[in-house]
Each structure stands twice: as C-alpha cells, then as structure tokens.
Image (cartoon, rainbow, N blue to C red; front, side, top):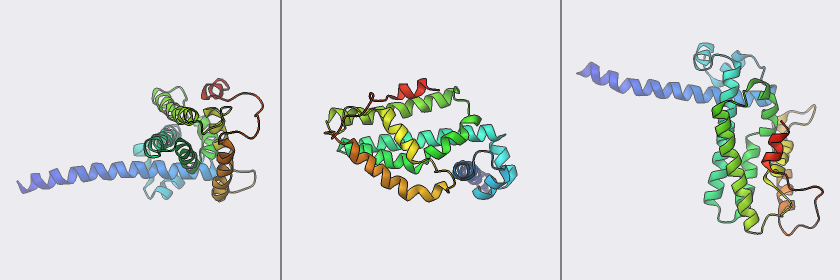
Length: 215
C-alpha cells in the first residue's frame, strides 16, 4: 500500500517536470532566436533552458519542430494579450494600446523573419492560431472604430505592420537593446492613431487580408 501511494504521488510530479522543461525550452528558443537567429546550435538552446541536449531532443526532434512550437507559442501569447486587453479595459483605445505594447514585448518583428524558413505556414495548428490572432486584433480595431477613438483610415493591418517594423532590430545593433525605444516610438504611433485625425493618410486602410495576399 505504501509503495502504491508513493508511485501515485510521484508520477504527476514527473509529468509536471516534463511540461516545465518543454516550456523552458520553448521560452529559451524564442529568446535566442531573436538574439542570434533560428540557426543557433541546439546545445546553446539547451544551455539557455537549463536542460540537457537529450531532454531537448526528446521534446523536439529537429529545428523545424522547435521553430513550429515557438511560432505557436508567440501567436498564442499575443492573441491571449489581445483578448485580455479587450476584456479588461473599458476604454477601447486603451485596450488597443495595451495590446500594441504587449505584442511588442514578444519581439515579433525580430522573431518572425528568423523562423519563417523553418515553419510550415499551412500547418493546421498554425492556421488555427493565425485565425484566432487575426480575429482578436481585428476585434480590437473594430471596437475602437465603433467607439470613434481610432482614426477611420487605419486598419488592423496597418497596426500589425507598425508593430513588426518597430520591433525589428536596426542593422548592426543588438535587437534586445532596442526594447525601451520600441515602446517609446510605439506610444508616439498610438498618439497618432487617435481620432480625430490631424491629417489624411495616403492610400487606404490596410487589412490583415491585404498582408496575407502579399505572401
């Protein structure tokens, strides 16, 4: 009886440890992909995560699988931030601003180009995560438009492009050192997005569908 009880209490702990290791690997890979690119050696990722190489390979068979799950984790996190902002902020422009800064913290501008060559963009779980993210961002923008606080000539695609550009490292600079500047300039951007607009933008509002058609 004692042995059975001990076995029963140990098993969940091992499963929890395995889950934590997997999360640590994904988090470490995300950080190091931003800093050094997606071709960084696996042993560096394992070292950053605080696990052995065997643990890394037990969770992710190759670089493509790891990049796939990093991409999923980033998109899920950004969508979660959009949903939380919409649910918790009574002011729709404050919700949009909160989302913009949270998305910047994910360093999506630096990360996405680095992992695009290693991820199957047509994978069902990637498509599902992308659809959820698109819906969350479009919902924030639509609500801000309905409230009359976001200038009418700005679309969800414009905001995604701005976040991507402002979180992408400048040539010859360490991308993580740009974080304080990214938030500073994102706030300048947000101030320019408020309605009423002091100027007329060239072209038309960019949608997320416009961005998808370019790929």
